[in-house]
Image (cartoon, rainbow, N blue to C red; front, side):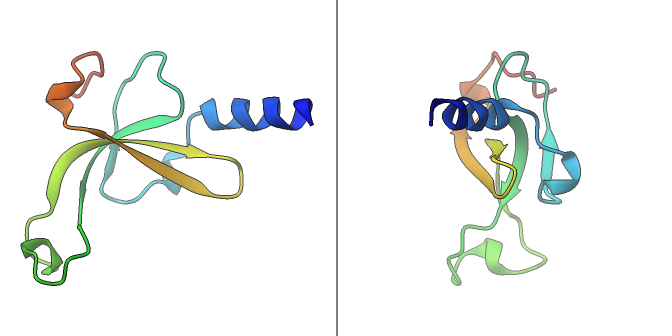
Length: 90
């Protein structure tokens, strides 16, 4: 069981293949951060929001961390770029 847990942790710390990321995701240099951190604009899912229009503006950009266990791709919101000066977004 311990070997499985260690392998899972190691796989989640690896960079995600850019081809597996959403089109709106722009990988950024993160130094030692695990996974792949991207700058991304998103649709919120509210049908009445301006972002629901295909030609409308999306929300963001915000930082997201993508990680994969080899079978699924998970994302975690990290917030606004200005809240994370340690992450190079330029």
